[in-house]
Image: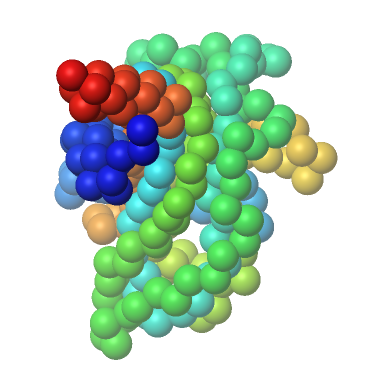
Length: 241
């Protein structure tokens, strides 16, 4: 016997808490103290590691927050890679304890990439740094617990002074991200030949100049489908009874 649509609606309504978005990684921006940073150059892809919360997740949205001193446009590419064993050993910053992924680097091929996306950044008209959010939605990609996220900026307008464009990658040891850093004082960059090269941080950062990131996810669809099937089966048994 077929059931009215209301039964299907009721079954999937019970899944809404399960399918809710959950933050799985947060890298906050600068905290106002002294820390080291790496200024992001145009046309170069930079990557850092993250240990994601939860399990069996589908990455859903990513929000990159950065500062800009004036109104400008920029092309941004955000990507995610699996963490694979590093090809070469890298000596981290003296006095910095390596993270859980210190022996890993990004894979050669991305799990997901946004491709080049053009964003307009707002300035406040007074050459101060203005906060901007870059939102990447509907990523819809199953990701493992340990990943590398990467970002690349290109075609930045109003970039004549070089250093005033906001994004800088910061020493994660001072920012306490909700996840594991490879080594809080280092990142990877991709050279023109496609090879991942570790780079260290070592310059004191000015305030309000760093980049932050938040990732949200939903449970893997297969789990939701199993719950839906079980709910539908229960409705059938109750209906027949």
